[in-house]
Each structure stands twice: as structure tokens, then as C-alpha cells.
Amino acid sequence: MEDKRLIGSAANIIKKELTQAFDAREIELLRLELRAKSDDPARDLTLPGRPWPRGHRHPLMIAAQRILRVFERLGFRFSESPEIESDENNFTLLNIPPDHPARDMHDTLYLKAGSDGAQAKNGKQWLLRTHTTPFWIPVMRSEPPPYRHVTMGKVFRREAIDATHLPVFHQIDAFALDRDLSLADLKATLQIWATELFGEGTDIRFRPSYFPFTEPSCEVEIRCFRCRGKGCSTCGNGWLEMLGAGMIHPSVLERLGHNPDEWRGFAFGLGLERAAMALWGIPDIRLFYENDWEFLEQFSTGAIK
Image 1 (cartoon, rainbow, N blue to C red):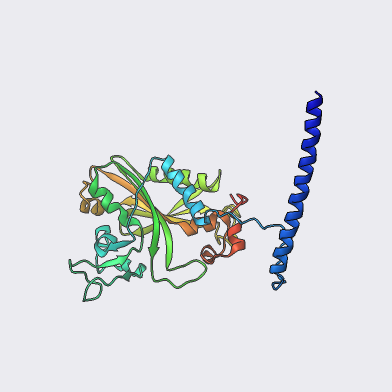
Image 2: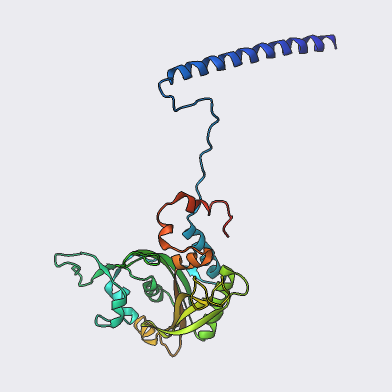
């Protein structure tokens, strides 16, 4: 017991001496460093360090993940699709021949692939895709139905830049093909999507429209979540246009090798930026791409849901 007391006392003396020596050396080194940096008065080495900020997902990727997760739960399988497409895939096989007026809605960026401009050696014209709908084509040609597929990616058009338009933006496109699908299946799918993304009580409505590759076609609108349909500066008339949809056109099915009397399908496509703007009340699409720190930081802590 006496040995333990003597050893403990000696250990405390040694600890005290080591601590004093460590503190003295630390002060000495700090003085040397301060003296070496004395020509830089803006640097105060006595200040505590600043934590390096952690990165986080971009708001568009947050919105994309939420949307794609809904369709995944509904049985849709994600498919990759190329950003460079042939004119045939982007237009012709989707019921948009060279003289079709619908091409005027797609201000297309063609690529030079040969000595004669955009005309490639194999006779095809190549372009930056104007929509993600061409992803139907390799899927329908490579495997038998039924299908439920979704894709997402950048699309390119010669657009004037303003608060709602950019020459490069993102689309999410999906389609399903089975024996007995109808508009009722399409509406039920999109109602689930709207409810999951915007919350319970979100109403949707179909408004007749036109797309060459669907028949019938419709624009899908959601009841404005700000004014609940009364009309406000966000929506104007109580409804927000969100996406285009319809039943896959029989002639498209025939071109891709499927009998329209046997198979029926629906499809829809939406702009990711437009959905994100509606989800968080963002007034200008350019905010997603300006790398404004204060804007992006709103999405780092989960405060915006």
C-alpha cells in the first residue's frame, strides 16, 4: 500500500513536468510561427479553425430521386438512354415525319457527322435529343412486352433563356405496355405520383392536347397548392400544367413491331425543373444553374422537404 502511494505521487510529479514542458514548447512554436507570418497581418493564427462545409445533393437531383422512387414502387424499371439520337429515332419512328408541323415545336440542334454537314455516311442525321421519348425504341425492340420503364436525362433545344426556359433541361419519361391498359390506368398512376410528390389532397385533371406519338393525348395539370384552385400569381387560373401524357399511338406500336389490337400502352413525360419549381415554389429556372451559395444551401439541412 505504501509503494502504491509513493508510485502515484511520483507519477503525478512526472505528469506535471511533462505537461509544463509540452505547454512551453507549444507556446514557443506558436511564437515562431507568428514571427514567420508577421508579414501577413490579415492572418490571425490564434483564431479557431473554420469547419470545411460538407457537400450535398443538388435540388434537381433531390426532386428526381423523389419522383423516380414513386415510379419504382409502381413497378417501373429505370432505363438509360443516349443524349445523341438519330433523326429517325427522335422524330420519324415516333410519328413525326420530315414534313410534320410538330417538328416546329422542337428547335433542333443537329450534329455534323460528315463532309455534307449533318448527313452521316450511313445516311442518318444525328442530333442532340429534343426529348427523352426515343428511349421507347430500344426497349420495345430488345424485349417482349409487357413493359413498365422510366428514364431521366438532359434534352437540348434552341431556346431563348428566360425565367421558364433554358436550352438544356431535364425530362423524366415513362411508358407502360400491356394487354388491357387504359386511360384509367394512366390517371391512377399520375394521381399516385402527384399525391406522393405534393402531398395528400393534390388533385389532377386531364386537358385534351396533341402529341404525335400518343392518341388520345392530354396535358396533365395539378390543382395549385398555394391557392387551392382559387387563382393566384403562381398559377393564374387555379391549376398548374405539369406534364404531357396519353395512350401510345397505334402506328408507333406497329413501327416498333407490336400489334395495336393486342397491346395497349400509356406514356407521359415531365420536365424535372418544372416539377421542382412547383414543389418548392421557385420562381426562376435559372436559379438551379447559377451556383448561388445561399440558394443551394437551403437544400443542405432538410429544411426544405
